[in-house]
Image (cartoon, rainbow, N blue to C red; front, side, top):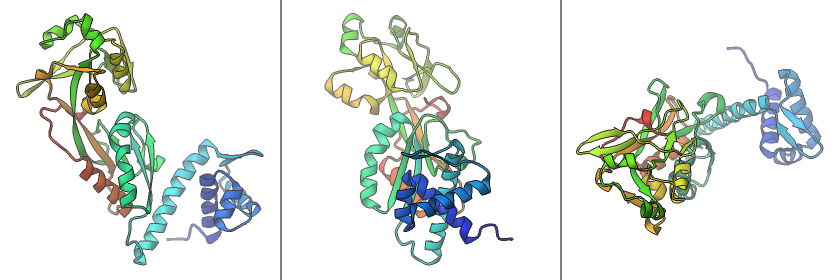
Length: 316
């Protein structure tokens, strides 16, 4: 194996990452114990060697170009792996430390995962966690993510999937809506109601409502004049405003039910759930910091059977 990186090239990459992290040459120089001019020259040499502009410089700020952002994400991940390899080889990796990057769906992140992270930080004070809240599928390699939580798992993705939980569903409406519309007693009554729809972003199809019929799940067609896409909190906001019935995750409306803003209906037909899973690349060597967060989330959430469940391909 021929040598690809000398000390100067590695140093330039490290100084570039410091500049991107601190968003300026002065702060990066302070962190590295150098002058701002030396850091600027080092990054300029790196750009010249690559033949691309990594940073946009103005008198007030330094920011990454699109190419620079991708290069920074990959270099930061590579430098982190090098640091961990050295700590492990020297026996210093006694405590998990370093950065973990995780992608979360917006609603599940806000309501389920983010409230747990302060306890994780107290348990592992040397681990940093960077969270991206997004409903899109991320590329672990190109974007430098360690973990992701998703409601839909592609079976041929090559990723390891560990179920976090089966999230129960329910149907609810605002008291104002139920004053002018008699609450449904059976699923057949739904045809006379405004049922707020959610459009699955991946294929544009309306997500069917799930009802329990004994031990079976039934996909029940519904209709309504209002529909939302992307953000599953949208239908809940409409339901609070009295627009109609909504089927959603129980964990999203627990406070609304407790405080009377929403009322559950068709409870005798509830019991369906959809899974949320933790995804990560199947690597032979997993950093301790990533393993620590995986174990923490599995222990804190963990799969809890909630009755009949629809396959994850239908989850919004």
